[in-house]
Image (cartoon, helix red, strand yellow):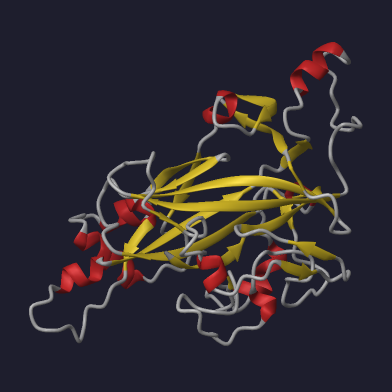
Length: 332
């Protein structure tokens, strides 16, 4: 498992980074990698600017920008090698959330709550946990979204290898990829990219192609997001203090900082979710964040130093929302 990189952010502010111009989805070739090294620990010649996590100063044009507003999606991809080509093989991504002050101090794990419309109504202060109302609010992804820039040949080759005759049913399937608390990538977010030419005698072209898998994913924090210390019972507080009149301005909310989204990325064979077979950074003898040159300290535009952890991917601003711009979801 290797090569994790951010390929797109759905905010118009990032168009200049990822798009050739504002009238096309053609990609610039700019990506944000784990570090400045490849899967073999060799330098691959990128600037440290284009490394994770995204924080203030990461933007290639607007030097004081980089942390995302809540509600904006970031897209990513990475690769695996081996037998992860079956219908029951998956990638599980488990996010953990940390609050840190804007001066880089006070990092702590936190609980998140959000407002969102689902089940035919607006739901308030939904706990972002693996149960309850949050699980009534699934997330969906389409591999063929033009801002993913998946090569057409890659899609066609994969559809053929999966014996899918209707390519569009694969390319444009809006597939459930999980919830805010857990993402599960499956065959509809996976392509096969192994070598198909110059193979030794006796090596099957199809088997070679399927031996390297590319996984495409995306994630966002909800637009209307609220942050508390772990275990704080928001609904109980509302019942015992202001009834149903919580306004999001109470003193217990954590503000004036960033939410760090940290990913634990694991490969699953044969639906065996209890025993992941690969981990991106969790294995002691094969930490790809270390091999790929991830830096545990990063200084933002404002010269504030942040101490980082393996798996830190993106900073979201606690006080800025995508709807502050013009509409939910940005440009794409």
